[in-house]
Amino acid sequence: MHIVRVSRPWRRIVSNAGVALWLAALVPLPAASDQPLVAAPAAAEPMVSDFDWVDATRDRAVPVRLYWPAQPAGSAAVPLVVFSHGIGGSRMGYSYLGKHFASHGIASLHLQHVGSDRQLWLGNPFGVVNRLWKAASEDEAIQRVRDLRFALDELLDRSAYGEHIDRTRIAAAGHSYGANTVMLAAGATLQRNGHSVEFRDPRIRAALLLSAPPFYGEAAQDRILGTLTLPTLHVTATEDVIRVPGYYSTPDDRLAVFDAAGSRVKTLAVFEGGSHSIFTDRPGTGGVLLNPRVKSATQELTLAFLRSVFDAQDDGMQQWPGKYGALIARWVHLNP
View 1 (tube, rainbow, N blue to C red):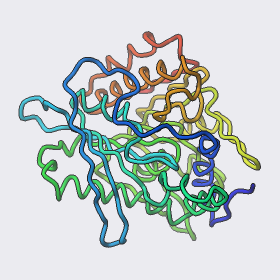
View 2 (view 1 turned 60 degrees about the vertical axis):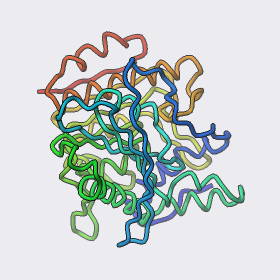
View 3 (view 1 turned 135 degrees about the vertical axis):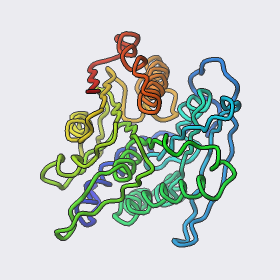
View 4 (view 1 turned 180 degrees about the vertical axis):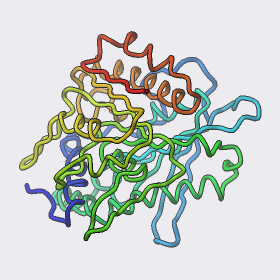
């Protein structure tokens, strides 16, 4: 198998993420479920709603799932996280995070990118590679960022929820290919034909990056990610490895993204062990005992990060490594 040949630097950006979950395709996916894989702290169950939006300007469906706090505090506006799945995922994924955020008063909007979603695994199995390569194209990478922008427009400006959302407290989160999407939406800049190309959405105030692949095909990561100056949280694991015939990416690539990010406020958490897909809803990947522990720790860490960014409450970030030290291989918290 060779890496899909599309124009650089998108070929490397997306091929990394595109093959990142290839091995996962060899294992039957569990049935989609709305139930969290890790028990959240006692709280009212959030409201879960699915919307099948269509961006008429692109003739592209943008399905979403919204986790909404059951009892928003008083009349206070609700913060928001918009979540981008990895290749082959759907709006039903990462429910353990969506429900956790909503149970703590933060709405979570989970996108489904129809050009690189779960449909890749359906149909003739001999066509999976071709479908992956199509998903790992320059056009699809761009469309995913546009999906995110459109979904924010739809939720904030054309839905009944918009007036209840605090537009000064919006973050974007993503896993693998979704992390690439978020980095572009949060300020990563590419050079194309001597010109800067960017897709930054100014409404996004922070980025949560799970297993973020680097921007391959570029000589210097800092030239691309140096313009990503928003607060960033980077979460990975020592076994966060991407391995397929003809392609291999080590966990050091995730660390390179953290090092290159231009954020003054940024945090790196590296779990000991795990896997690339341990941050998905799959309950066993990375170890049946370790998996739920990492998910629980990730829930608490991401929430603490949001509190730090949204509310200037950094206590949770300061306390987190002490609580989960047995799981952590590396921890860096920069908050000048």
